[in-house]
Length: 251
Image 1 (cartoon, one colour):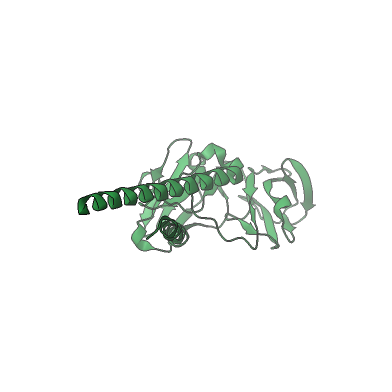
Image 2: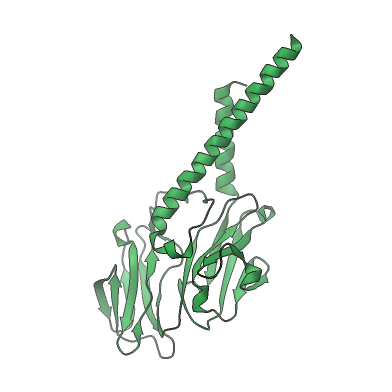
């Protein structure tokens, strides 16, 4: 087999691995913010159960901590019966082979207002509804919404719908209900409708970098590609070395 054919096969094998051997992290209730004391369940939806996926997190109090250190494992899920502001951070599923799932930034507040927004990236062209929700009273209260600190709208029922979202709608969103307070901010990511889900990255960002998640994802994906290329080159070098040894032995 010549070097070009070997490189092509290695490239195809690596792409097949990164696109099939994945997990998807979901959160229930499906929102990126939670009130202190809420019940939250995180689950690894696995494409390949043999990969050995583990749920981990980075917060202000722990790094790469497994479910058993902060929750109760239940199959492929991890349940937090009473979530605390210290549980705010970045969560992901990780396999023993190295790949990780999508990253979920979860924010827990001790206040009385949260912004109910999508946990996962939204697809370009879709409609997205945000809900400004209070902890102790009905949620159909007048709310003011902000994007990147700039006023974007006001609604008497606490809802705001972004129709046909585009990349320009990406940003940090928060809301305010008079007399109750302001929610934390949450980042909303918009993905291209014609772009497939990128391969999982190898290292999650720290909890404090959640606001810059798009840039972090790009850098981590580039790092993964570099690692794959290095491995491919090493395999080629080893094969050449073995071939030269065999030729020498025949002579």
